[in-house]
Amino acid sequence: MARYTGPVCKLCRREGVKLFLKGDRCTSGKCPFDRIDPNSRNRNAGPAAPGQHGAAKKKLQEYGRQLREKEKVRRVYGVLERQFYNYYEKADRMPGMTGENLLILLERRLDNAVYRMGFGESRTQSRQLTLHDHIRVNGKKVNIPSYSIRVGDVISVAENALEKDSIKALVEAMGSKNAPKWLEVDAAKASAKVIALPTREDVGFDFNEQLIVELYSK
Image 1 (cartoon, rainbow, N blue to C red):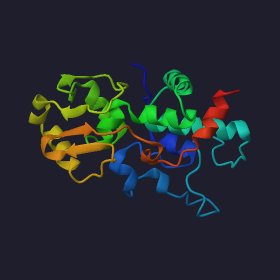
Image 2: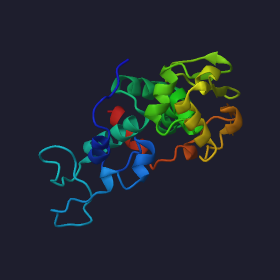
Image 3: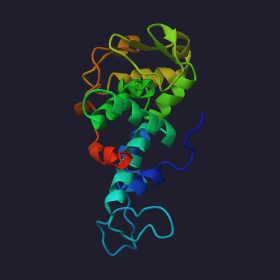
């Protein structure tokens, strides 16, 4: 399965905003995004974009703003370009606003739902746990991160996985995390029930999805 394997913090610097791709590290003092270049004349400039000319501040035109917004959403959910466009096409065929439909489809991914229920410090880790057969949906093994969850689905951690110390630590941390309202989490049983489909308000990021719609509508 194709996936991005490069430096993760570089993506946040490129988008100029924290994408929280490394879990707890992003909220700690170790996050490179919080470090200001000591040689910078502007102490509030923040980290520069990666590359030789990253420090040069360029004013984005309309296409640039649309592209950056698309890349921001794509990187938060860990989806490659072809798959992301497929989500857009599906969202465009659905009733309602295309941009909101796109974000809701991404929220319904199994790896995202596993992350939202608190099992995993980041979406990347939750995706890995899914791929390694540690997740069950309605009691059946599902190791496809893009699996779209539905109302009534019960997502749980495999019983044999609970024997591992690393998995036990992740399960113990579930109780301290805030789950979205569309998930009913039972930390004691390491499971969560989908009681509703996610809405635009449940996304948690300040995305401007209309820019993505304008980009793909050209």
